[in-house]
Length: 180
Picture 1: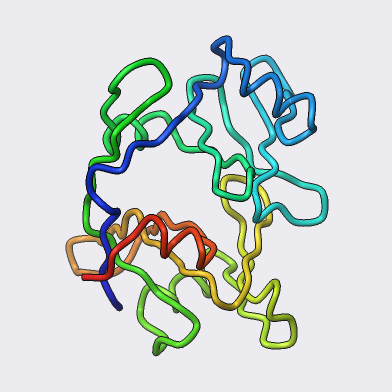
Picture 2: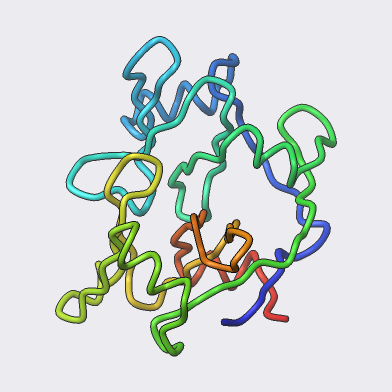
């Protein structure tokens, strides 16, 4: 696997679910965010499949990609990886992450995702090559997308017990990350 790091010093805008925000209101009006319960939301990111979005909760953050799609970021992860500058502006705190693309040799982490987390690689459909359940919903990404590993957890024997990952569209990856 290769390593990448988010470009340092990148300033991003993020909006916290449950707080008053004109941007969140607009996304709700456009149907890109749907409230499904007291503290539960459905987020229709670029990777949403068959009319089903990713689940997010009050306190989680919403970022907007360059194509105008929202995507959820867990509250804890966001707090660990961003520093508030002012209002809705945050600086990303870069950390190295492992990445994998369809051109790479299949590794232990991908084997785990395929066996235990339902990752599918569909050669017949390049626009939905990757698919897996992410944050409670089926998501897909094109064959040129990048799998970014936010966390790889192993037991004392070195066996993988869980993996946190996301699909990142290639254009977004190239804007936001640098290969190490």
